[in-house]
Every structure is written in C-alpha cells, then in structure tokens.
Image (cartoon, rainbow, N blue to C red; front, side, top):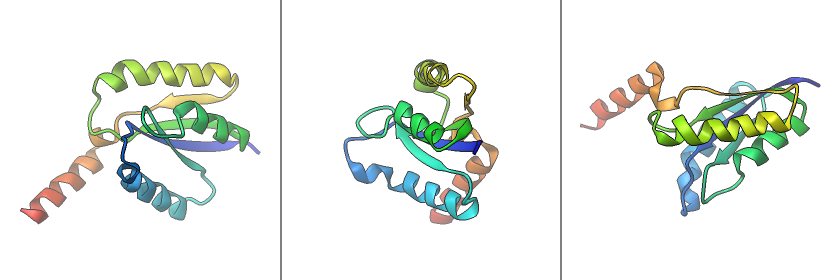
Amino acid sequence: MAGKGIVLFGHGARDPEWAGPMNRVAARMVARAPDTPVRLAFMEFMRPTLDEAVDALVAEGADQVTVVPVFLAQGGHLKRDVPVLVEAAAARHPGVSVVQVLAAGEADGVVEALAEYALGVA
C-alpha cells in the first residue's frame, strides 16, 4: 500500500526528556491523521536516525516521505548537513520521494504561535 509518511527531524540531545515536545507533536499528528505514519528522527545523541526512520516508513509502504525539521531556523545543519542525509536516504530507496521542507520555526503559523505564547507569559 503506497502512501505518505512524515519524519519529524530534530537535533537530538543527551537528555531523553528533550524529545518530549516532539513526541507530543507526533501524537497530535497521529490523532488528526491516523492514516499518515509519523516517525521521529534525530541528527545526534538520540535514535532513531534519519536513515532508520525513513527505512521504517518505506518498509511500511510509504512512497513519499516528508522530512520536517523541528528546528527554529534554517541554520548550518539544515543548509548543509541535513540535505546530504536526505539525499542519501532517497538514493537508498529508488522510486520513493524523500524531501526536506523548511524548518518548522520558519513557518508563519509557528512564528504566530511563539509570539502569542511570549505575549501570554509576559
């Protein structure tokens, strides 16, 4: 069964609790779109890696994988390192579209939510 899959991709941290917000985002996504598989992946310190997450989605039948960087901005990792990882994942799965989108923190809705939050706590 072909379909779409989403990878929420974060930097990673030594403290496993760091991934809590990403887990909550993934749970909300699954609640809203139960037929769209969502996986977390991390650049360093944590697992799964991007390769492992993409491989799992493809094994489940995904032929389109969108990598959503859960980063505040398009910094060095997203400009240099992540595209290389995404290209390598795509090369391992011919016929599967693996694409990286803009950092979540750059999206207008996320900027608005952050502004609202900051105003509400000030």
